[in-house]
Length: 107
Image (tube, rainbow, N blue to C red; front, side, top):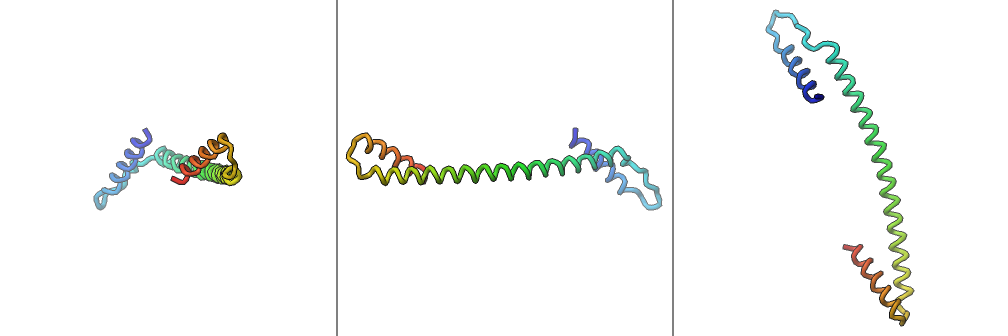
């Protein structure tokens, strides 16, 4: 409906521009068309503000997750370092899992 209305207004405007010399304008575009166009611009501005504010919120959340991921990686690296010198088979199994996780994160 919106696209159709816009196309209709564009058509009316094109008709107004094609008036032969000496002829008067017929005012094809009425005040309801102008009101509708103003409303569309206002809605677009509201949408732009909404998108901008949500982008800021998303960026903050992404940064939070990046920082959290760094903390987990640091904790895993510390665990790997502390576990490498142990002779316990269970610890070596856990160590292999931690090393696998760290290697897969690098890819």
